[in-house]
Length: 82
Image 1: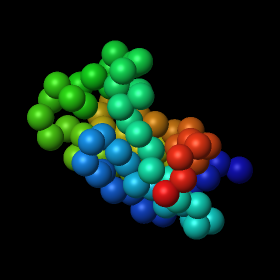
Image 2 (image 1 turned 30 degrees about the vertical axis):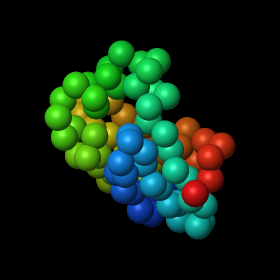
Image 3 (image 1 turned 180 degrees about the vertical axis):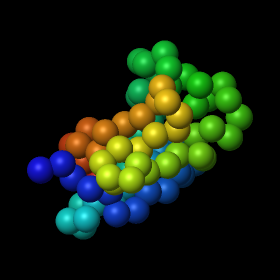
């Protein structure tokens, strides 16, 4: 079953605070993706883009634009729990 996101908040220093329907909470560090994925570098280069994070209608993916997104299962399995 794909985990569904209940709440999403962009924090300072390229962190996402994510809570899932089952109560699991994660602070996801997007800096790791920025360092390794070229498309994610726009989150640093384009002023204010990181704060524009959105949740898709299925609540299984967060995204910034057509090229930058994160599936909920990757966030859920991230090993830094809030």
